[in-house]
Image (cartoon, rainbow, N blue to C red; front, side, top):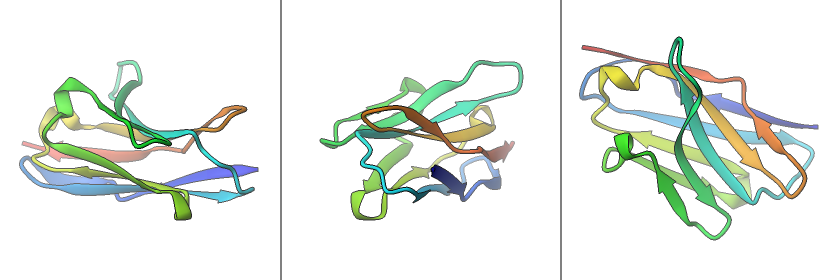
Length: 115
């Protein structure tokens, strides 16, 4: 059984920063890719950033230049550094990890950016 545990969400003013972490626990699994998605109220869940096992990185256009994704393979952990946050970044942020067999999701962490 694999669990993804997110942390680091919260309330921040516009222009502020937050750092999200997602650590995998339980059965040791090698992840091919890890990433972050977000879902605002009434909207679909969208990709924020994605990093492959070869460190190939993809960002949503809306966060390019402001967010940075990184991973520590030894710790099976992925991070999302979010700078210059905007009210439109407000959402529940979900961690995702993909092994050779399936996709795993965290429980989500709320990020709220006030104007």
